[in-house]
Structures are given as C-alpha cells and as structure tokens.
Length: 343
Image (tube, rainbow, N blue to C red; front, top):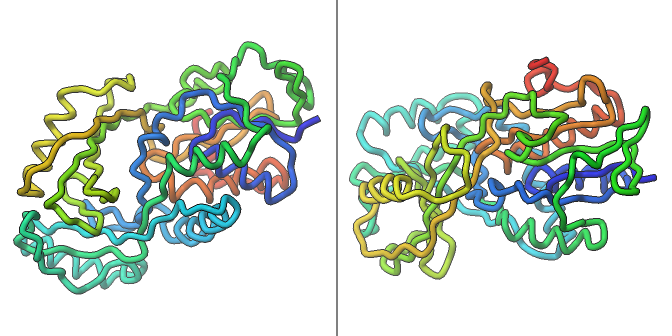
C-alpha cells in the first residue's frame, strides 16, 4: 500500500512531493491537467507588496523557507530553476519616493528595500522619478521546474487526468483504479471546483493574462514593476503582466486583456517591440486571500492543498510542510489557512 496519492503537479503538488520524499514516504502523482496557473505563472518571489510598500502576509518566514527549498530542488534535479534577479519599482512621483523611504525604516522591510533611489539611464524606459530596488528577490522558472520534476518522478508520475468517480473511500485508506493508499492530497489549482469532495470550499479563481514581447532595444536586466510587471526572459524577450479578471473562468486569451496590458506598457517603455505570445490561466484565489489547507470534515484521509493565489512560489514550501506535519504528526494547522474556517 502506498502512503500517498497526490493529484496535481503545479507548485503545490511539487512542494508536497518534496515533503514526502524528505520523510521517506511512498507516493504516485496524477496530473489532472488543471494546473494552468502554474504553467503561466511569472514565478517571482518578492516579499514586498509594491503597491503599498508593505510586507506580504507571513512574508519573512515564507521567504526564509523558500530559498533553501528551491536550492535543494536544484541540487536534486541538477538544473537551475531559481534565477536571482532584483525587482525595480518605478516611482511615479516625489511622494512615492518619500513613501518608499518611510517604508524602508520599518522593521522587516528595511532588510528588503534599498534606500538608494536608482536613476534611470535607459532611454527606452519612462521613469523620470527614478526606481526603488527590492533586494534578495528572484524568479522560479516554473514551467522548467514542472517539466524537470515530471522527468525526475519517472514511473511515480501518471500523465493522466484524475477521475474522482473512481475513488473508493474506505475507513483508513483510499482505492483508486487498483492503487491503495493511506491518504490522498488534492493539489488541483482551480480544478478543485470540479472536485466533488472539496468543491464546497470558496475557491473563487482569478483569471490572469500575460504577454510575451520581443524588444531588442529595451535592454532591461532587472524586473520592472509599475502598473504591470516587465520580466526579462533573455534573448530580448520579456513577460508583460498581469491582468485580473474575477468573472471569466476560461483559459482563453482575450482582446480586452491584450489592450489593457499594451496601454499600461505604453506608460512604461518607449521603444519598438513585437508581441510574440499571449497566455492565460486561472489563479486559485480565495475570498480571504489565504490558502486552503487541511482534511475533509468526514474523511480525514482526504486532504487539500490549494489557494496559493499570486504568491504561490513563496507560499508553497511553507504550507506543504504545514500540511505534512498536520497529516503525519498531528500538529495543528494555523487557523488562517485551515479549511475548518469555512465549515
């Protein structure tokens, strides 16, 4: 009998698999093809909310856990997935500069906010009031991570959709197409809406769309944040994103999102570029902006790890460890992430 079945191999699924491997647990993974959010994620890890110059929820402990977590994965996969790159915040006014200095004096933020205003020497950028730099940031190459992790799992990875109707629930184990397992963890992203065991949870889902542009004259080496993110990809390619749509739950790209991104991009750069690609995905977001972690109220060997939202790269290592400790060591979950808050 297996210890675990894991459903989904986005950031949540990979992080939970890492917890299982560290603790010598046997498992298989079913990729249920709902991880579009991970596939189109920008992959940035940044503890600072750059709209308000504040720390994200539990940002420091999440950050301290995430960096060595991805370094360990890199060592295991023998490939680079953590790209160290600073984030620059464009200032639109002197007032924003002053707010940056005030924030940089606050406990917690002083570690990450550089108090030196960076002058703009790039003729392709529109940044008359300069730039502020967030230190110790980076980008996880999410698509590469997922691809390489599938190869690493080898026979433990099942490239097929998971059929919830075929899951047999016994008193102390589950049975799925002849596989018996002590527990099953659903890491399905927005696909959780189709999960009959956990679809009672308030997973809203927020659609995000990105553009990939080619801009040979831009010569940008740092991530740039203003009304949109500009993320250098190499070879003169950049990700432009992202939009937020709370009504459309499809993975189809839209002209409206394209126009919105291009209008915002026009306030950021002044050079020629071409659009290479447009992508869309549904972020697994929750009404209270906290993850969904815990066991089913009637079936304790069914568990969920979801709702990572826009900061999944930083969140995933922390909440996957919390779920493992809860399932295996009876360590209570933080009430802010425990799904019991919605029961």
